[in-house]
Image (cartoon, rainbow, N blue to C red; front, side, top):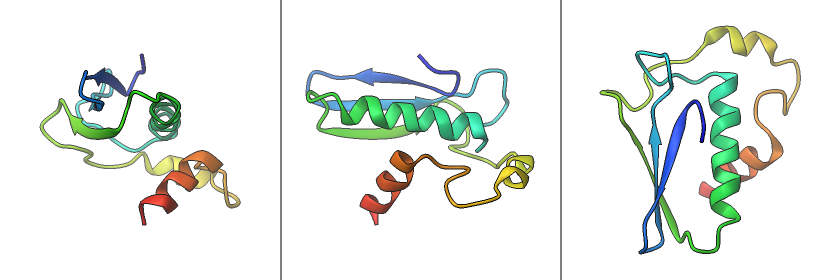
Amino acid sequence: MSQIATIEKRDNGVAIVWLDQQNEKINKVSIEFVEGIDKIFQELENDNSVKAAVIISKKKDWIAGADIEMFGKVKQKGDLFSSHATAMCHSIN
């Protein structure tokens, strides 16, 4: 499905999101990562069969860093995260 993760949906309503960025030694935060996670959250939110999600890594470390160049692209609120991803993060708090 994605360059950053795959989703395993189980019959019990649990979705397992397996982080595994292709062609990377580690999972790292990047624009592509954020966009991919946003798409995954949207898919899970729109699937009525999913009641819970677990995010886990296929790599040794869960997320081990960030593409610091992406932060230079942020000029105003909303440049990095979509409104959907921002709303999802706020609902967790």
